[in-house]
Length: 146
Image 1 (tube, rainbow, N blue to C red):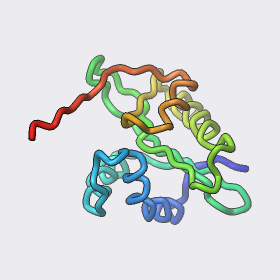
Image 2 (spheres, rainbow, N blue to C red; image 1 turned 180 degrees about the vertical axis):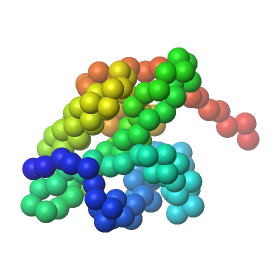
Image 3 (tube, rainbow, N blue to C red; image 1 turned 90 degrees about the vertical axis):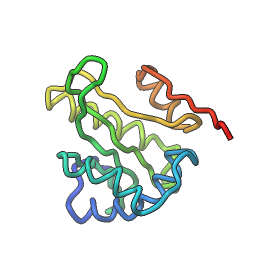
């Protein structure tokens, strides 16, 4: 098993999964469309974001998207996990944890002191993130008026 930076070709393959990733990650809050996926991913990739991939037997098992943002609360530049995804056949085998740990190492090596991510309510990945030491900062709430 290897975790490394994705090649251009691997990144293109990952982008083919974006409707599926968007649907799963947003827990039904976002209607998946190619346009919405591109709206969310273009700034990430154009802003220097990249993927780490977990490869075993020449197959991509999962990936984590890494970039940076400005923390709105502190104005500090921090590492950011834009996306975490493990393909269904490889879930519950520790792949996501290993990808996160590799992401932390990469971001630390780049000099970041903090990493942030966004996770939707109901997404089971939140439990993993909490085990890895992430803490809630804020909660976006909504109420339908109609």
